[in-house]
Length: 220
Ligand SMILES: *Cc1c(COP(=O)(O)O)cnc(C)c1O
Image 1 (cartoon, rainbow, N blue to C red):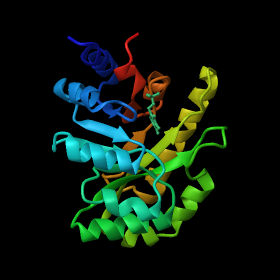
Image 2: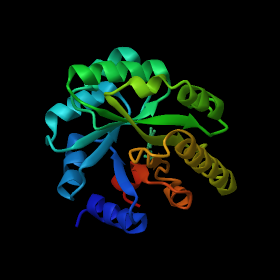
Image 3: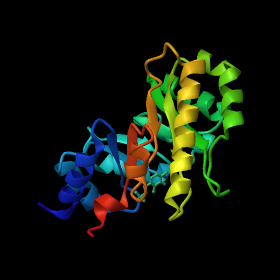
């Protein structure tokens, strides 16, 4: 067994029903192919350009997720194939995704990215902005996007207590949004939290999807 396969097995054992999204940004095509050969089908990139290249060169049954900031003028490039967009942070972006999805005869699953970290370098809606977007109801008219849940990132810190607090906060916001706006919508069920350094903490706070790169590709 190579180290990618071993790392993946080790992580999967801890996940239970939580889905593993392998973050392949900066990795070679060969490394991604190795992960694919070990059975992985869901991969994520943070840049549109990289997504397009990799989509065209790697096996067609890979489900590609976007986890990085998305500009409205680039939606058209990924709309034909993207399996999920984790980084939706405005109604305007959601409307453009809807428009491009319709052109491609698709419904694109999306997550709303919220901001729970204390750093100001990260993208996302704060709690108030999230509620404004959802209360405003315009999203209900978008028949080619499906809002499937929430994505968040914790601060890059060694302070475990802080990471626990931030993920707990993300979980609370997820549950609150579910009950206020998506009570009868079974599609709203994903909480995308947890990366290599903090996924074990995220699992304690209701993570349904972890996004893991380095722990898969780097041998320890
Ligand atoms: C890079 C990245 C990850 C994965 O980070 P690792 O530390 O390599 O696991 C997860 N989520 C987002 C949004 C990222 O940009």
